Length: 342
Image 1 (cartoon, helix red, strand yellow):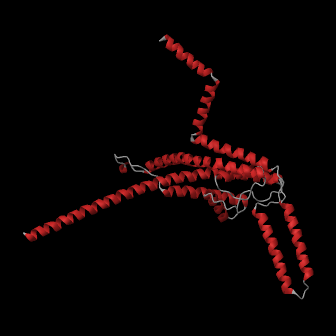
Image 2: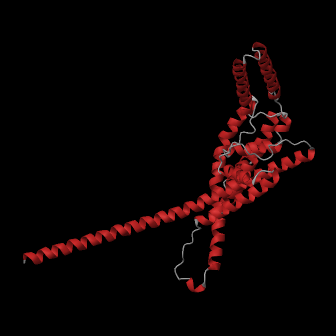
Image 3: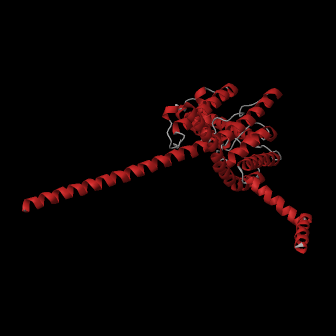
């Protein structure tokens, strides 16, 4: 026994002093923590922070040549309009109007094509701030994709592809796990409130399964959307309907891109600081709102499953009742025939 004791003690002390065993144990603990809801949330948050820093550092090294392209295109089509005016005199109004419309239409198509790829007169340092890059990182992994800010450098585009390939599955895992956690918390609160509002004489010996109704989930989301719309309306000067439109399209991961917080130009340092703060708070609003969407999805799925189960049981009971009635009718018909023959 002493030899066994000393041997086991020696092996445990050896594993404690073994650096490889310590590293394995540390990695095991880290992986176990990352599988929890808190760990997943911290991992997604850290992933977006790393992505924001990476995109900001990559894109700020590039040059914004689009203002020069706009000026060059403007000068080119002004010359074309001048040549049209020289070609046609004032008596040839129809041809002058036709050629002028062609030139203006081509100019419009060129400008629209430039604006389509996220044109901005600001420099890359002004566009790719940390708050803007943070919103871009969140938009990539959550598949919102506003489109108001896009990478222009080749390395930025390559990193976006790699970032999305790893970030989207990570966000889906976060969506499912955090949805379960928030649904469990909301379910517990709803059951406590339900039991507090239930009269003692209504209680029975058989415990009743309490399911959160879909109406409660809808009220939670409506309240969250309206609160966010009120804040965005005050911040950005949007109409209330436009703010509701932005909140709903963002939380539904549609991301039209026609309304984005902090997209307007800031002239002073104070306005720039406020714009960055608004973008960070918008990030928090959308990040937490997507968690609420996951929570409502889980709760409504539970209610739908329960209703489908009840419908299945009712349908089975209806079939059984129908079968019994048919059997009873057959017995009556058989008895009537036997009476007739006798």
